[in-house]
Length: 110
Image (cartoon, rainbow, N blue to C red; front, side, top):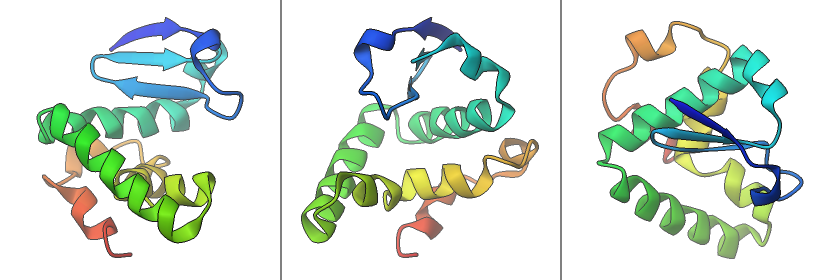
């Protein structure tokens, strides 16, 4: 994981973005948050599973679908299956060791 602090790249409500192998942060203090780091590591795993480019294509399609349906950027973001998996498991420090391949799939229809 290569950490870059880039506050100028982030909208004010975005704290960080995982783009394997980079972790772009709004503020270096976020590295102190195990929950935040775990969340982003889950995204790294998802990106590797989908060969990076397919993760981002899927993310954009799913986000757009939810955004049109819900008419809210925040609600669309929270309903993306990748985000659902990351938020649901960001408190579990051993999640990635026990995670099955394509685990985000079960969050697709939730």
